[in-house]
Length: 350
Length: 223
Image 1 (cartoon, rainbow over the protein chains, first blue to last red):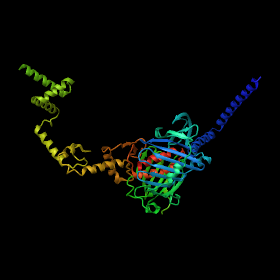
Image 2 (cartoon, one colour):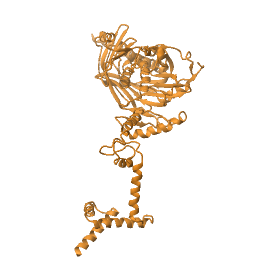
Image 3 (cartoon, each protein chain N blue to C red):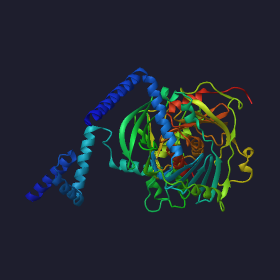
Image 4 (cartoon, chains in turn blue, yellow):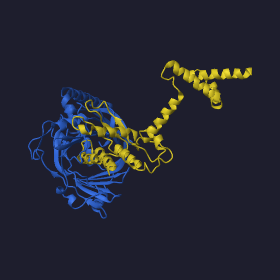
C-alpha cells in the first residue's frame, strides 16, 4: 500500500526534473546571448567576491618572463574592512600590509617604509553590476571542465579575447568558494606568458586583523616615505585621447611624483609634490586588464632611448612625442600600446 | 738498404695519402709521428704542399722567405694596433672582440693596458643593464650608431643570466624588440613605471592575489 504514494511521488519528481531541464534548455536556446553574458558576469563576479570577502592564506607563486617568485599571503575580511598581508619569499625581503585603501610596504634590509593611498578601483564590479556587458563584447568566456589545484577541486574557465588587442586568460576557480587559485595569461599564440597560482592555500581561516594592523602602525626605526597622488583630469592638463583601443575606457587620472618611492635620497623637500618632477598617469581598462599612460615633459638627460620592453605579459612602450615623453604600460599586446600612444594629442598649449 | 728505401717509399706514400685525406685512422697517428721525428719527412711534406699550390695557382710559386717576411710584418703591424676591449693580461691574453690583437697584447705589460679592464667591465655591464634598446631610425637617427655599437658589444659581453632574445614575429615594422628573461638587471626607470602601473592593477578584476603578487615580483627586482 505504501508503494503507491511513494512511486507517485517519485514519478512526480522525475516529471518535474524533466520539464525543468527542458524549460531551461529552451530558455537557454532562446536567450542564448543573454544567458552567456549573464553567466560571464556571474562567474567573474563570484571570483572577485571570493577574493574580497573570504578569509584565506597560502603560498602564491608567480612564474613568467623567465622568473619565478613566491610570497606568503593572507587576506581577511571583517565586515566592510579588508586586511591583506604579503611577504616576499624570494629576493629582497619585503612585507606589504593593506588595510582597505592604505598600503604600507616595508623593506627590512634598508629600513625603508612607504605608506600609500591606493585607490581601490572598484571598477570591475561596477562595470559588471551596471549591466554593462562590455566584457562579454570583447572576451569569450567558456567553461573547460574541472581540475585540481593546490589540493582543491576547481572549475576551469577559458577567457578568449575576441580581437588582437588583448590577451587571453585561463582561470582556475575553487568550486567551493569561487576563489581564484590559478590564473594563466595567454599570448597571441596561446602560449602561457605568465602563470600565477597558489601552491598551497587554506580557505576560511580565522581572521587575524591584528597581524596586519600592528606592523602598519609600528614603524620605529624605519624611514617613512609618503608619496602623494593628486587626482586630476586629462583635459585639465591639456591632453585629449583621440582614440583608444577598442573596449578601453578611462578609469583614473592622477599626477604623481615619478622618482620612485624609496630611491635612497629622500629628504623633506622631496616628499612634497612640487619638489619633484610630476608625471601624469592615466589608466584605461577594458574590464579585465589595465593600461597606464604616463606623460611627462621630455628631458634629454633622463629620456635617452625609446624602447619596447617585454617582461612576461607586461609590455612597456616608451617614446618621445614632441616636447613630451610618453610611456605606455599594460598587460596587452604591443599593438594596443602603440594605439594608445598614437591616439594621444595635445589639445591646448600650456 | 733496400728495406730503408722501401720504408721511405711507404712513408712518402702515407704522407701523400694524408695530404689527400685518404689515410685510414690507424695509419694517421703513425704518419704524424713520422713527420714529427724525421726532418726529411717534414721537408717532403712541405714539398708536396708546394707542388699542390703551384699546380693550382701561379701566384703561390714564390720563395718561402717571402712568406715569413710577410708574417713578421703583419705581427709588427698588429702589435701597433690599439686594443679596444681586453681584460687585464695576467696569464692568458684572452680578449673580447679582437682575438688577433690579444696575442699582440700579451707582449705589453699590464701597466700599459691597466685601464682597459675596468672600462671593459663597465662597458659590458652597461650593455647588459641597458639590455632593452630599440633603434627607431625615424625618431633618433643620430643615436643609431651608438645603439648598434651597444648591441654589438652586448652579445659579446655576456654577463650573468641575462639573455637577449629577439622576437621578430611580434613586430614587423619595428627593427628589434628585446624580451627580458631571467634575473635581468632591468632599467631602473622602467621599473618605476611598472610599479606605478601595478599599483592600480593590484585591484584587478581577476581577483586580488594574481596582479597583487606580480606587483611584488616587479618591485623585488627593482629595489
